[in-house]
Image 1: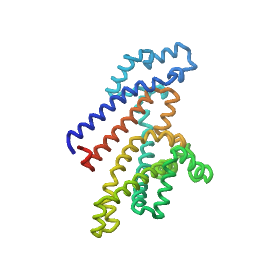
Image 2: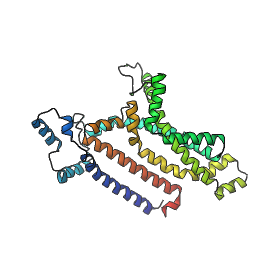
Image 3: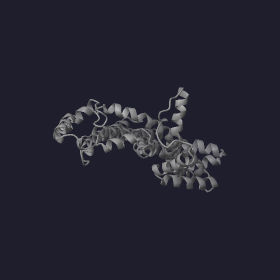
Image 4: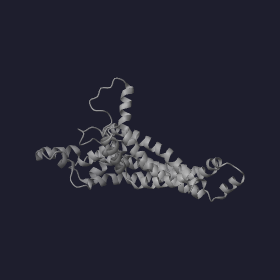
Length: 322
């Protein structure tokens, strides 16, 4: 990979992050209301004024608050939460991020394996029963938002059948006798949210891979491989899939970047204590530092995911580097 291509992509990513940092400051201060009105509405005016001074909200927005914000970001300091008793934002987000990463990391992995496999087989056997059923099923899943899938699974398997819990990450008040029992209880609570994420992603992976495989069937190298007498499986693995995977790389990277964004609806439906539910709590409380920290984390993850996709794409297809 050329150094000029690599440097150009990295510079673009850095400039994007700088713009995000500035937008992050302005965006949440444009919301109606303020933290002191939400969190200290029952306190006397003197106490509210003291809180505003402690939180730095009594200073002019520009340049005082902006300069202080940029300086804190440069030091790696995201501030302290207004809602969670002045706990550092890094600790607040750190406590909530691992449930989200487990949920969406495993869901993404399942969706990649099942979705790409189903799409590749459907495209290779276009017009067959698997193609009709698989493509129709994928279109239905692709058109359904996370919360709809989650509500269906919740009503059927949790409320009606009672096979799984309706919310939470562990059974409340239960004392575990061993780590194995605790892991089993965690997996029991994880199953429905995990299936919601996986089912919601399978459709788009399947549709994209099916379309890419169908496009490769008309290429000369596939025709040549078949003329050599290679088996269908060999042609698919060695010739069709390596070229059809390029669009999938971009989609996978983008979805990885949007893990936290998708977490909001799924985690709210299932009461999963991750970044999604933290976002809703901080939004209701006008907790600027936590909201800024989450938005910054989400935005940078998207930028890094897109940078990784560009670099991988450039490695797999040298034509994009010119």
